[in-house]
Image (cartoon, rainbow, N blue to C red):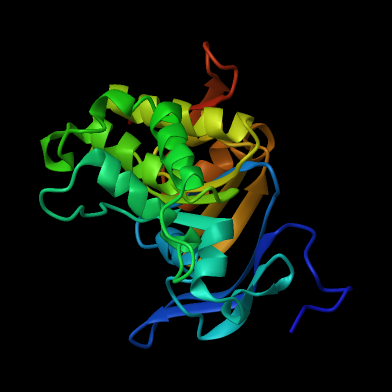
Length: 268
C-alpha cells in the first residue's frame, strides 16, 4: 500500500517513524529520514548510536518494530527480494567471501537479482560484470582468489559486486573499516566518482573529516536519533561536535578541499 500524497516523501528511499531493536533492546526509538536522490549521504555519530542499525533497516536487512521504510513510495516489504535488489544494493560491514572463489566469480554473484528459471547467464550479465570490474579498477584482479587480495583491493572487489547489481541506490556500511589511510581515501574517491556518475549513495563512516569532505548530505546521530542533517558546511560546527562526541574542537577550512576540518583542542 502506498503512502498518501501528503505524507509520501519526495526521495526514492525513506524511513518513517522507525523503531529499531535487537532482541527487545531498542537502539532507535523513533526516527524518520529521507535519502536525497542523487546525493552522497554519510551517516556519522558515536559508537552504538544506531548508524549501522538504520542502514540495515533501509536495506531491509532488519525489520523495524514500528514504522515503515519506503522504496519508490511503497513499503519496502511489499516488494519481492529480487525486485528490491534490482533497485538497492547493500554492502555490509566486513563481508566474508566463500573459500577459493575468484574475483570474477564473486562479482558475478551481483547478477543474482537478474537471474531466474527462464533467464540464465547472458551477454548483458557479462557486460555488467566487466563494467563493474573496470569501474573499480579491478579488471587485473579478475582471475585472482579473493583471499589473496590486500584489504584495499578486496574492498574494491566487494564494491564491484555491488555495482554488478546495477542498482541506482548503493548502501555501504563502514566501507573504510580496517583499511590504512591511503586505501580509505582510495575507496572514498571511488564512491565519490560513482556518485558523480549519477548514483545515490548512503554510507556509514567514523571519520568526521572524511565525511565532511565527501558528503553532499551529512546525517549526525546520537542515541538513536538524528540531531542534525544537511550540507556539511552548514551542519558541522564545534558546538555540535562537542555535544555529540564530547570533543572540544575548532572547525577550520580544509586547506585542500575547503570543507570543514575538525581540529581537536589541546587539553589545558
